[in-house]
Image 1 (tube, rainbow, N blue to C red):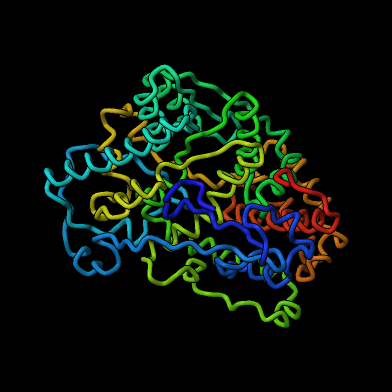
Image 2: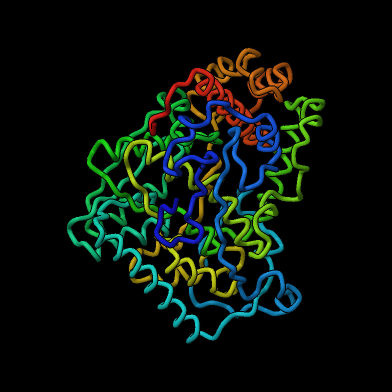
Length: 469
C-alpha cells in the first residue's frame, strides 16, 4: 500500500494476513493475537522486515532505491585524506545531544564540488521538490504540518507559492516542542502569508491517549511524541484538514543527521541489553527466534546501500507509523513529498560532500532554499525528533501509574516471553531514575514497548476493534 504515489521509501509495508484482502485491518483478520517468537525478535531488534508481530500475518517488503552516494563507504580512503574547501555560507549549528554527536561519517573531510556545480545541483533539487509539492497542491492539498524546522518551513513556503492565500499551517503546542522551532514556525507562517493554526496538547491527556494511539498505529509506540502526534492529527481532522503535507523523510534522503548511523548502533545495543533483562531466556531459546544481527537494517535487501537500508528501517519502524497510520485512524491523509520518487531519487543521488559539512547535514538543501526560508530558520540547529520520554514528562507520575496498571503478570503472561518479575523490577528502577541520565531514554523506550505489546494482546484477546475496522 503506497501512501505516496511512486515513493520508494514512503511505501509503508502494510500488514497482509495470508489470503486476505490487502486493505483490511489486522485487527479483524488476526484473531490469533501476537506471536511470541515475533515479540522476542521485536524487542531484540531482530524482526525481519517481512514478518509481523501478529500470528499468520506478513508484511509486504518494499523494493528499495539502489542509489549509492558518491563519497560514502567506497570512498572512505580517498575522502579522509582530502581537505574540504571553506564555504562562504555559515554552517548550521548542531545539537550536542547523543543524536548529533560526531562520528566517522560526520568528521571525515570530503572533497567538495566546484561552486558552479553546487549551484546547478541546488537548482535541480529545489525544482524537483517544487514540482512534487505543486502536484499535491493540484490534487487538493492545502494544509501543512509546520514544526518550524527547515524541512517543514520549505514545504510551507512552496505550498503557499502554489496556492497563495489558501494554505493553513498546523503547529503542535506540547511541552517538549522546541521553543526556537515554535518561534520559527510563526516566522515562516508570516513570511509565507499562510494561516497558522496552533494545536494545544496538554501533557495530562497523553497517558490516556497511549492506548488508542497504539491501536491506531497497530504496533508498539516508543515515545510520548508519537502519542502527541496522534492527538495532533485528531485535532487537525476535527477542524477540517483532510490532506496534510509533512516533512517526514527529509532527514533520511537528505543526510540530515550525518552521525545517525553511529548513534543508532549505540541505541540498538542499549535496547538489546535491556531486553535481555525482561525476556525469559529459556522460552526465547526454545522459540528458535532469529539470531541477533549486527544491526537491524542489515536484514533489509542487500542490493541497496547501507544508508538506504538504514533509512528504510527508520522510516518503517519509527517515523512513518505515527505519521501515516496514526493520522489515517482519524480519517486524515498525510503526504510526504520528500519521499516522493521524483524528489527522493534526486536527493539520494547527491554526493555526500554536497550535504555533509563539518558534521552538519543538508548543506546543499539549506543553500537551495535560501530565497524561500528566513536564515534564522534555514540555518537553525537540528533538534532530536524522537528523544521525548514519559519519564521526562510533567505528568511523570501519571505515566508510571499507567505502566504499573499494564505491566502486571496477568497482562504479560499471554505474551509468553516476558518475565513479569524482571519487568516489575525494571519499572521500579525507572521510578528512581533522573530523566537526565543516559539510561532513562532506553528504559522508557522498553517500558512503553512492553505496555504497547500488552495492549495489543489484550485487545486482540477481547476482540475489541481498532478505529480502522
